[in-house]
Length: 313
Image 1 (cartoon, one colour):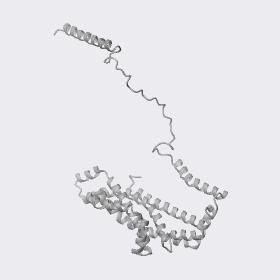
Image 2 (spheres, rainbow, N blue to C red; image 1 turned 135 degrees about the vertical axis):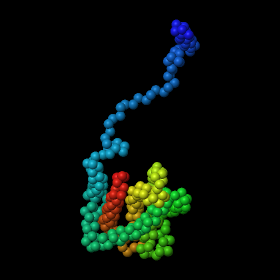
Image 3 (tube, helix red, strand yellow; image 1 turned 45 degrees about the horizontal axis):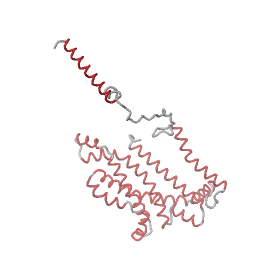
Image 4 (cartoon, rainbow, N blue to C red; image 1 turned 180 degrees about the vertical axis):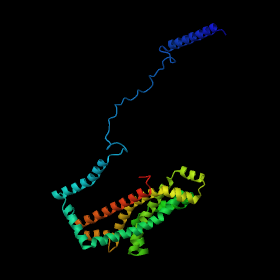
């Protein structure tokens, strides 16, 4: 085909397309769809103002400065203390039920001078070391078996899922029959109250190990034991320490419950003894000692976690 004929054919096609659009426009009584699409059915776009710049304190997961963090931490302790001082100074609550901070410190100092506070504190700490330490020795291997092997998960998970819903305090009468009212009772309550939760938290940590790491290890020729020792255990260790940090708080709660039931030493026994004589200042002093011990334990475990798992810190 010659160029002149090609141009004439193209002109004819354009003219035919134009006639088609005009016919469609005439048929619909408006603008042709092909030329200008009708957007009347579309919902109007929402109109929003430009977002304001938010402070880092109210931003989601945005780090704050070190000074702001320190200020908020101090305020977290100062505000409850200030409320306590105001309530005791104005005597809105009877001092018999809410002693002043000065009276609480004086009662704690008096118990410390007599040496009984340290005796009770060491008895409580010793029970936590035995009971919760035994729970760690049992729960960490079982948790790693559940998180690593399907066979371990099938064997341990169903029965432990049922047992973890049984409250440890409900075992106290049974443990008194089995173990008596000695130290074994307190250690048994601590063990039952923490072993199941620590097991499942350890299993969740082990399951979070990226499968790519395991596959790469096998590809490079590692054996099963080497994958366990050099990949799964090192990667899970910081998370396991975090699980212990959470459950050691439950250990402090349970040891007081166990000491309230039957004991001649311990902070729980001291609280019950003070309750008999309505010495609320001594009760407050013992509670503060328990809180300080818990914070120090958490701080030590956090330092250990940062030490063994620096990539997590």
